Image 1 (cartoon, one colour):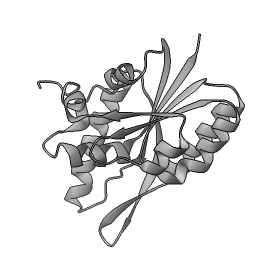
Image 2 (cartoon, one colour):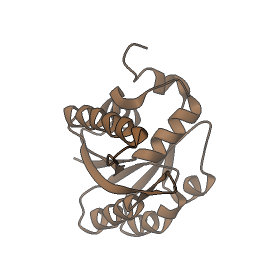
Image 3 (cartoon, rainbow, N blue to C red):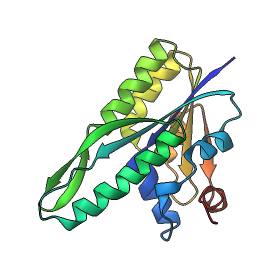
Image 4 (cartoon, helix red, strand yellow):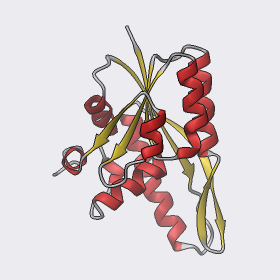
Length: 178
């Protein structure tokens, strides 16, 4: 039985989905449903990577973002999805995600070397992950790039074993009450 690993780069997924469908709210999205849509594998481990939001005193935006992220985490846990956290650094009132890409890259490489998966699905368009992808392929792992029809990474298509392109209709069917 093949082992499949699906990794969501949370902020990358969020930004690409919102660019495609600005009106959607992903707090209650069916992430495990998306995993089943893109792979027919029976044994799937899903990990969601994201920067952890902290509440800052007298910062209303941080309180709203924190509340929404906690709702997202509850939804992910209900779907048996592992959450791995980086952090968000606030600089000049703007949040910047830190540490997430490194965690994803380390998990790609470690998982390939330790034979934790046979096929790996990367839901991200971050080309910084290409060296990790190449290492996984050198370890004879299949790496599948999962991108969005409105924002395709040609570099990831070129460097991965294969690809799946998500369409607007597929995303909409995984949002409750659509």
